[in-house]
Amino acid sequence: MTTLNTEANGVAQATGAEKPKLGKKARVTAKRAHVAPKKAKTAPKAKAAKAAPKAGAPKKAPKAGRKAGAARHGSKAAKIIDLLKRPNGATLAEIMKATEWQPHSVRGFISGSLGKKMGLTVVSAKRESGERAYSISR
Image (cartoon, rainbow, N blue to C red; front, side, top):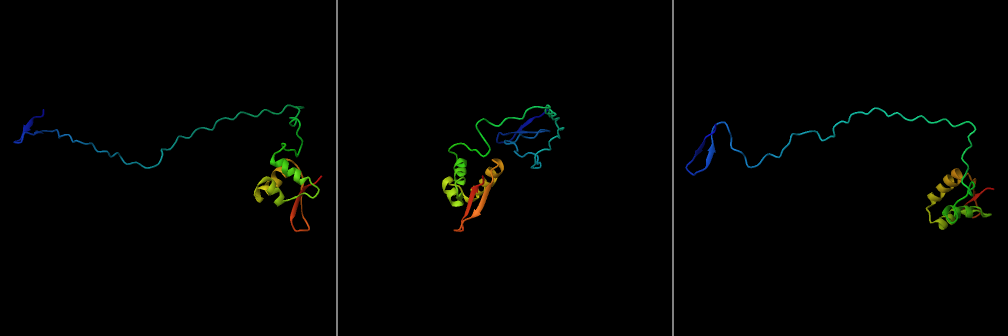
């Protein structure tokens, strides 16, 4: 049991085993490492087996109306193909002007899209003026 003693100024003080309560609590927590806790390892998920192709099954037909080396009408790819089909072909500067592309983009398109994806054979030759001209071989 706690008894209160009063001092001369009238303030009550706790006596005995209890201490007076403080006005504010400490806002400090226990110090821990600044890393996330380790996650538990999950077991690998089973993958579904691929079905074997049926014998004699026909392959997918190409899209109707499109042939190898064709591009949509009015696209930049179609503009480049038209330029390269001319008898003298087209220079890098002509292609850059028609497409508003940088030189590395034109070269990448010629080797990647025309050469690999569309299966066209692009021939590069130097003209008498020293400029390099690209054309599609027929």
